[in-house]
Structures are given as C-alpha cells and as structure tokens.
Length: 193
Length: 193
DNA sequence: CCTGGTTTAGACCGATTGGTCAAAACAAAG
DNA sequence: CTTTGTTTTGACCAATCGGTCTAAACCAGG
Image 1 (tube, each protein chain N blue to C red):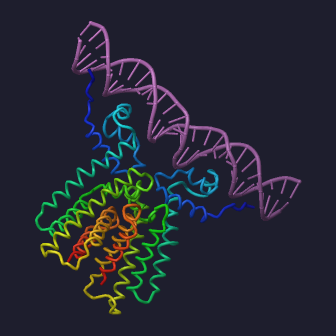
Image 2: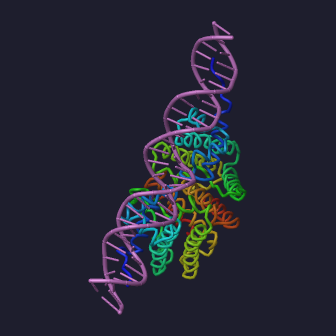
Image 3: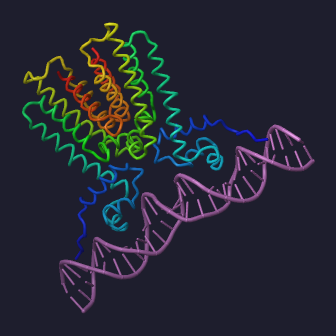
C-alpha cells in the first residue's frame, strides 16, 4: 500500500555530510542541504528529524565509512610499525590532496560543536578513542615482534600520536604546507623508534 | 566640538572576543555581542565595520594580549629547555582550568573560519608561525648551551611541537582528560631530549 | 477503478540574522 | 545660548533561519 521513497537515505546522509564537512554545522543551513541533495524541504523533514539528527547520522557514517574501515585495513598489515607509518603517510597525502581544505570532520566537530552538545561530544570522544586504541594495539604488537623498542611507553605514546594526527589535520588546513606536514609525520614515527 | 564615546573600544573588543571564543564565529550573533557588552546595536555599527571587522580585531587582540606576551616572557627564561617545559606545563594547566572548554581562539579559528576567509587565514598563519619561531629559537639556543642534543632536528621538531600544542588544545576540549594531556606534554619534551 | 496510506512539493510560519537609518541626546567651541 | 559634529537609540529592513503543514501526486491491495 505504501509508496517507496524516491531517494536512498544513506545517499542523502552522505551528501549532507559533505556539506557539514565543508562548511561546519552552524554555517550549514537546511537550504544548503536541500540544494546539495535535490531533496525538497518537506521530504527531508519527513525522512529525518531535523538538522541535528542529520548531523549525528553524518558523523556516524563518516566514522564507519572512513575511520573504522581504514583502521581495520591497517590492522591487517603484518608489520605494526609499517602500519603506523602508512597511517601517517596516507594522512599527509589526504591532507595535501584536499583542495577545499576541509580537514577531518571528526576534529572539525570536536572544535566547533562538541562542547555544546552531549550526543555529539560522545561521538567525538568515541571516535578519537578508537584511534588511540588502534595506536596502542599496534605499539604493543610491535613490542612483541621486537619491532618497536620496549622503552616506548605505550599509552602516552599512542596519545601523543593522536595529538599529532590532530595537529596535522588542523594545521594542514592552511598554516602548514607539504614540507612541514611531512616533517611532523616523521617526528611521529620517531616517537616509536 | 565632538562628543566622547561612552565606552572604550578595546573593552568592547575584549568582550566580543570572549563571545567569539566561546561560541565560534558563525554561531555568534550581533545580538550576542550587544548583550554581552551592553552597547546598543547602532553604536556598535558606528564604532566598528561589522561582525567580520569585530572578529578580526578580536583575533589581533587575542594574539598580542595572550600569545605574543607569553612567548616574550618565556624567551626571557635563561634555560631554553626549561622555557619549553614551562610552555607545555602552562598550556596543560590552562586547558584543565578552562571550565567552558573554550580551547584556544587561534586554533578554533583555524578550523572553523580560516579556510573561508583570506584575512583571517593570514592572521591564523602568522600566529602559528610565531609559535613555530619561538620553538625554533629556543631549540637552537638550547643546542648552543649544550642543553638540547644536536641530534634534534630544529625545524621539524619545532613544527611537531606546535602540532602537539594544537592536539592538546583540541583534545583538551573534551576527548582527553588530565592524565592524557600530561602524557602528551611529556612526549613533547621527549622530542627535544 | 477505487481506495488507503505514504511521499512529495512548496507555500507558509514566527523568529532571528547582519546591517541601516533618522531622529534625539549630547558635549564642547563660539 | 547657539551652533557644530558626533554618538546614541530603537525602530526598521530584507533575507534567511529551522521547522511545519496542507494539498496534490503516487503506488499497491482490493
């Protein structure tokens, strides 16, 4: 009896995510989203709860599509030291190949929106802890394999690596160029050497 | 013949800065500023060019009042290694004593607003380079004094330190707690050891 | 073909946005 | 006291904000 939607929810979320990513939460209007998706205002509110809901879903999709899948892939790399190196290489590469200088949606959100909204703060926290856990896991594994020196303090180092990731993403939006970003990435690797 | 203003421009800028700092540029309305300052709308527009102008002035004031003065003070510390340690100590302390989790206006701006506005981007870039230069100067001086090992690569290390500063400020807004922040600061010091 | 239930389209809502303006209030110079 | 040039004030502006709602369009079961 019902009538099928003429669009896929996940497509709309993906496109909304791009807009939030580029402009930030506050600066994105519903009209921006309807323009980007072609969906009419009414349909949007029929399918979603509103701007906040749409944003939360965007964050979730971003997390699973971009972050989690990448971390799982890197965990499959046999050499954990190599995995961490690859992480930073691809981070720098992604930052340099980002013509709009959008940075990372997770970190952008950590700064812009996180402190005002509890749902979002938790999502951001969880996302960041996922990266910390990845580094911890790889460092420990590296120690087992004798690949990473035992003198490396696992948790503090993992956290410092994440701080460097944040720094790269933020500074990559304008202040730092190619050389600087690569130098920072190299210092990150030095932390586990 | 004229008539003196009933307020000090720099006071208004200071208060506007606090609002921008707490809420971000996009989320701050002119009404927020008139509420915070008590200045009426028309007077505000008579004294300043508008929201953007007010924001640029806020950034400038923030830079000279908070960043530059602090760096000059630390440069007066005889032991450069100690100066860098003090920098990170007070950074962590400031981050922890920040009940509103406002973070740093400069970095908040780097993320929220910088990529859309050239004036602002330059201000942010200059501010960050000022910190890089501070670290470079201190590292070089430390090498002279035999206080910092010659094996430390000055510029890359200075840049990595700034990246860590950014990480601390961003993650300090919610994701990282006291212990984590202190661990990151310690890793920073390890970079010059 | 009709009817029930859902989606669509887009007009519409009050509130708020950044910004303007004319008139009133004012202090100092003459 | 008048003149002069500035500041203050609050009403006002069009545009846009996030969100609602009704009527038309629509597909499937009967």
